[in-house]
Amino acid sequence: MLKHIVLFTLGDFASGEAKCEQLALIKRELEALPALIPALHSLEVHYNENLAESYDFGLVAVVDSLATLPEYADHPEHVRVAREFIKPYLKARACIDYTEPTA
Image 1 (cartoon, rainbow, N blue to C red):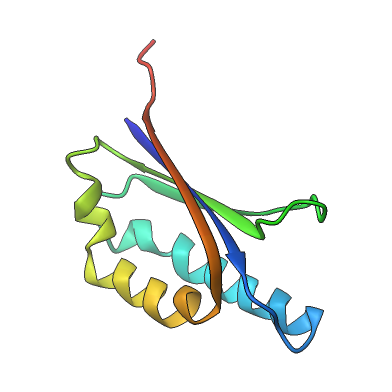
Image 2 (image 1 turned 45 degrees about the horizontal axis):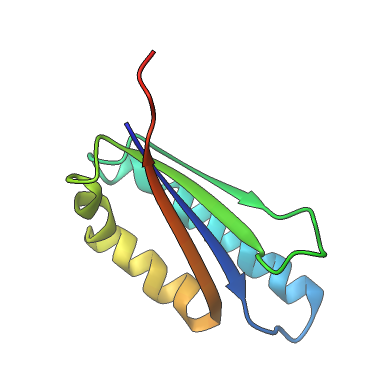
């Protein structure tokens, strides 16, 4: 299994409450994707609790392999969520993909 881990920093918001609302919306939309994208085994979103760090949240998505990652990444529902809920606020993004060792 391939783990696709992405960290995001969002830009400035009018208030902390507005940022929290957007983060909750992003989490809800992203975590709904496994039911819509057959190649996506799971997806979890986690908020960064360490305010001294620059990334606001991260996601961990699981797919079969690097070869099947585009089936998730290019899927219209994933593209829609990224375009509508993340990209308008995106300041920075970092990603790592690795294959989980088998037991």
